[in-house]
Length: 419
Ligand SMILES: Cc1cc2nc3c(=O)[nH]c(=O)nc-3n(C[C@H](O)[C@H](O)[C@H](O)COP(=O)(O)OP(=O)(O)OC[C@H]3O[C@@H](n4cnc5c(N)ncnc54)[C@H](O)[C@@H]3O)c2cc1C
Image (cartoon, rainbow, N blue to C red; front, side, top):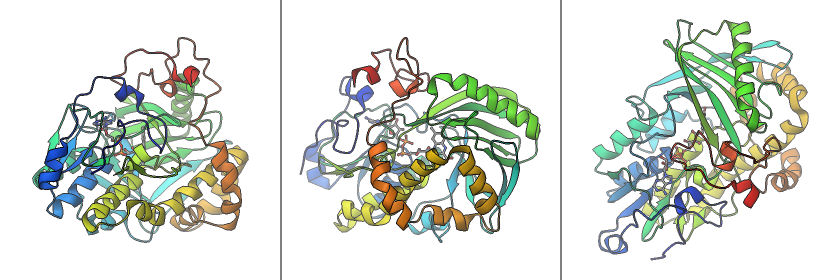
């Protein structure tokens, strides 16, 4: 048995200082792990719950520790896309193969509309679903709640309101993002608009990222996803709403503001103190577009397999996740360089011609150009993003962990300044 360093400081990336600054609430028992082979999973997001479900199917005793009172508490009923282009196998079939139920509300998206920075519209379509629209948060029907229900049905013990500071015994670390490399701000709302899926690449609306509008059965999510310019998030959100109003007649009833952050990096190792690290806590996230759910689910499954089969988790994630993660880091670097013109070219020449899943899959495949650019890209993103728009004075931005988006955060000194 290996006792880990405190859950936070790691050889895989920056610390969860918010957690480590608090008093320890729980330390999973070393003796129970030795006695009955209990696996402690720390974090009840998609990564942790997927891991718990697969372990429970294999007959292992699993205890999931969740810091918050409810699963999915960092989300707000917003729509997210469970991507379906990165492999030939449909993502729902992949989950079913791993024994993970797909009873969450989901809706296949086969077509949408993309805008470039000049306002030109491009229809994009897939022969198979490009992604599945799912909802996130603590409510019934969300991905988070459905995974929780399934885990409990299989006998997994889920302890809510239990923040773990130090892992020991057999544990899987699944604590979600450690820092903000990108943020999203937006509204969830009700609407009379027809279903639709829209995205816009425009540096004046979403610097380094994109704005999106997702509508399904009278509910909507509109947001801007920023890789820089965090300090002006309200300005970019206002521009996003105005742009979608003008182009597609966005109308919102009862809009509720939401925000969140995402953390990506390519870790040197995804084993911390002998424990597999999964999902965004490992930095597993598509660095170009912020699609993290499939990586979270996949890495959770891989960690479970490593414990069930005695396989080396490091070998598994490097073989099954690393090639795409590397490509996504190189993609981010290239699209940052190319900016609006790069996206215009991509939309006109690649993504709006035929089945969009094919060029998307190619985009995330290793290639000579990505191999060549990768060392430079990795160097560029070696540390969490330093947002030049933040002056760190009376700072309330999530990058510095003060933020509105981190519900349980108490005011504390700006980390960017301390770093
Ligand atoms: C606004 C927004 C939009 C997004 N849109 C998309 C999208 O369209 N498609 C997509 O694929 N991805 C999207 N993502 C990313 C995706 O949501 C995440 O990558 C995914 O949720 C990561 O799952 P996870 O299980 O690793 O972490 P999380 O979902 O963050 O779960 C981690 C859990 O661990 C708990 N925890 C943390 N520390 C401790 C501790 N010390 N002890 C106990 N519990 C702890 C947390 O409370 C949390 O419940 C989006 C993210 C945001 C913020």
